Amino acid sequence: MTETDDWFSDCSDIAMAYRGFAAPDGVLPSGIVPLMDRGCAMWTLIDFRTADGQMWDWDPNLCCIRHAPAPIGQSLAQWLTDWLRGQSHEGPYPDRVSAACGCHYS
Image: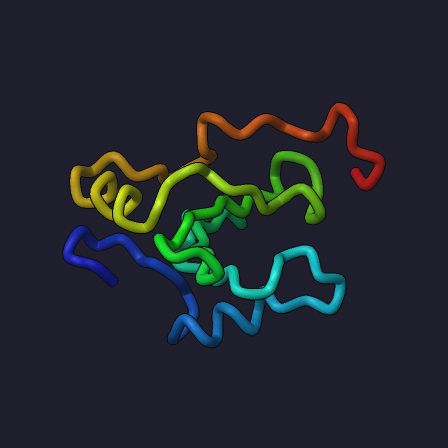
């Protein structure tokens, strides 16, 4: 829990959250780790494969599990700055477009 009373996850640690996302179907690329549980199955993730820690969104509510992960175009530093300013996204990211119209998995 943070000073703002927001929970980052129901998991006891980041390794536990990562294991929960490590599915055999390979939907989430290796090296992308869940960082913050935003509720309603939405997560903010960090990409440890990039030097600046690019941030990703996980939102299966847009369509299906295959379309849940997507980069959000922010580094960890940018995302943390927004979060400290109270500008982090608690719900869906506004720039994400639903893939449901062309999804054959939903």
